[in-house]
Length: 119
Ligand SMILES: [Zn+2]
Image (cartoon, rainbow, N blue to C red):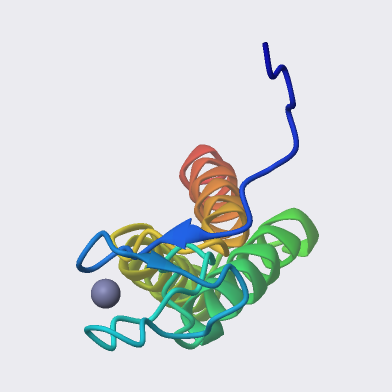
């Protein structure tokens, strides 16, 4: 009984199912790419960073504001709005930088609560 457990010396094409060389970047039969990387969207992470930056800025502003005048309220709401919009954009795109967007949304939410409680 042959009990060998060595890995197979070939892969199956992801496109047509035929046996191909495991190192082949593309199927020689149908041309389908054989990359093993999941199809992660490598789009810009700018929305996530913007969300985090503006969320943190809003939180810092809310924590450091002594008097809540019209300018402070408008500034806070503006920063929170940008952080929330960028964060939501990021979350809808299912990218690896979602955690950054969540940080932005969280800090923006805390900043908003501080601002509301300071009126
Ligand atoms: Zn193929």
